[in-house]
Length: 327
Ligand SMILES: Nc1ncnc2c1ncn2[C@@H]1O[C@H](COP(=O)(O)OP(=O)(O)OP(=O)(O)O)[C@@H](O)[C@H]1O
Image (cartoon, rainbow, N blue to C red):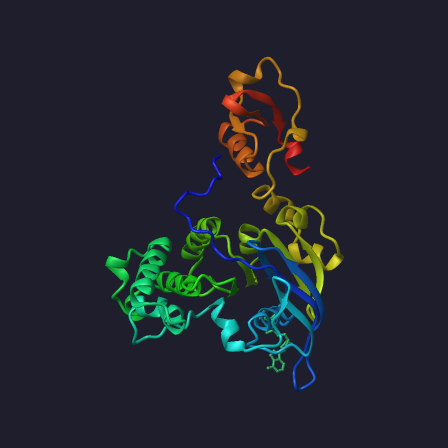
């Protein structure tokens, strides 16, 4: 697989986020987040997940200071953001919420161009950026740029929200249940598109969701929180599903975690057994590095209990049996 970025891609800004002993106590005494430490690398997509009321949105909104922390520090690339002007800060941080919050009386182009305009970009530069982003989120500007939000589907509005959040090349993108207002089919499509988009722009993203499948699909790492913003586990989707760190996480990820994991756990060399002479004619082939789900699907389709795993130039490397898929 070629992972070299296309030569025309401009380097895009992405900051590391560090939460240090961050706490939020609301004026009525509720401690939404007690003392949370979390580090997010530049360009990483971290999902915050946990039961209702555990403090996910509070954590997210402290990063752009829509909510002020009661204690602790938040650093962007090592600089404390808890002092300084919150409005300036918010212009460097994209924010996408469930019900997008587009301006209904402004065109799609005007909506996406909001922050560049506020930042004083020239009309030409702003327009070029807006059109580039609309193209990137799959809404060709010639067709959609002059429409109003009321003339779009829910999924299209959500894409405009994402384009708007990315318009001024933010350091960080915060997303609070961004895909939950659309039906499951549109949601799946938006998630796929969003993954492709993230592979291209590589922003540092913090995404809040209730949906474990969404977390597993999108997250580079997942932070599982329990009440009071307590960090139960912070791990890759594969690790979280393979080895829940606490009883809370084990229950949260559910009894079917082995099945969910098939989609995110790759086929690796150590799972393979030597080939048998009769294998090549009988068994389907699956490339190394494909997901274990792909291997299971190939087995079920062919009605067999094993596949031949291939490497470079389709060279057979070994056989993978159904039992080892869950290892
Ligand atoms: N303005 C407020 N004043 C007092 N308590 C609040 C306020 N906002 C949130 N809370 C409380 O803080 C806790 C965390 O809320 P938060 O919205 O961060 O949770 P969440 O994990 O995002 O929940 P959900 O998944 O239901 O959206 C909850 O107990 C909530 O009732």
